[in-house]
Length: 595
Image (tube, rainbow, N blue to C red; front, top):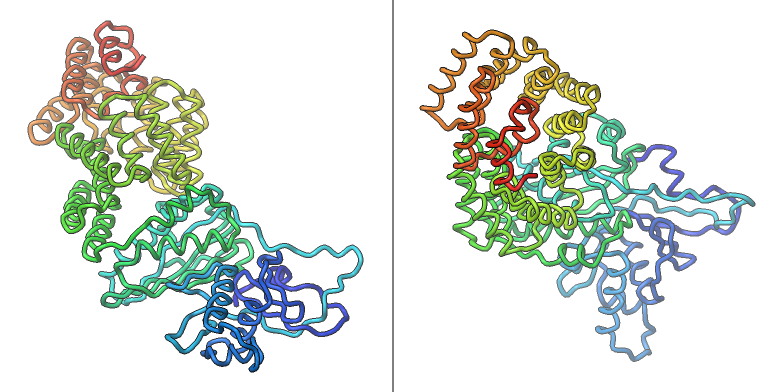
């Protein structure tokens, strides 16, 4: 057992005189043989006499098979006539219900064929202690409260690097399952990935992530079987609170993840609503080949490069071919087409219909899938400009899974474009709280603060990103736009050049009075547009800087015609403020359903 000295005080009462009694502790449970009580986190649980005797008999011989005949002799006199089989089955079932245990994936009581039962949990304390007669005024120490947690990257025990995608995928899936519990704040994946293979202490990690508990564990896949072992640790004290192990067929991985989430919720006494409980129990098994392809898709999706995103789509489609009703794979495909569109890796006529189709199919299969709801909301807003429908889907996504940081960040962008800046700050801040080490979320926070007029805070936030990653694209670009808005055109130019935005570069050069260089940058932009898709918004910026207002407006009209993903942001981009009163610009905003 790993436990700090002061944490041990939470698990045992002070030493006082009285008759000796035997107390056994495992996980979050404490069994007092003398008092005939089972306690969870110090609170007494209802367990009748016969089920308690069964539990006691198993705890007397942990790891050994206790036969049904032995249990019969222990529970009933030889000359007593009872329906033994039914009585014992009922007693064991009551023990399992009290411990929140599962027949299919037991953590404590295992059925051994037709022979009997075995206690397989870890005994953390088995001792004779004085009877509790606490001195006057003594107040028992409660176990630590758990309201926030992070799932650390599950370790790959296979010994093969090519299995890393599987353990990473198991981590992501477990986060997604636990994140659906509203009463817990669960940190998103982007913030925990840096702890993969880390030797940092649990208290340090908990402090950096701002959580009071951590889940760590391992994954081993051998052939068609997978073993997942996890344990819950109190972060500040490094004290073990609960552990469990699941050994199942690979086809049952979705069910296992759901069972782990339910076990964690029970271990921390989290409130689980009826809707949340239903979502956790409605999962089913999945074709192993389809799930393997899905996990490989997630691996490439995390790379956020054009090649990685396109490869992720290939794997998702392979998964869907094998398992057409695989809702998660459809939603993941939509999530890949999102960045393929807004990072201009694909033109809108390719990315938008594909994103819409994948998200729609995901929701047809699972109307409550948070990834599908978020993807359809993003498509409706930034691709299709249906802001009210999009807001409804964002709100529903947040209601279904209040720990999905992407929903808050993208909803914050919608609010920003509509000019609801303080609401945007609040939504973005919540997304950052759920993903505190995600630099993209932090740069979004900086931009939201700037949009709300909090310039000093914005600059500080964006500079903090660059301290961690001096080449971070969004932080460098957004700081350059802030420089432009405050007339520091010369300061902005190097940043735009380094991030490769030729339209922004041409605009800043022109505003700095370097017209010849601006025209040269515009020429490079036009040449680049011949080779690959470039948003017409970049051309509009270049022409606007050079004073070609009519041409700039025509470029925006072309962006409207092809539904460029970044066009809506023009409404609040300070570089376009000089033409915001132009009739053509105002008409364009109205046609995009923006006031």
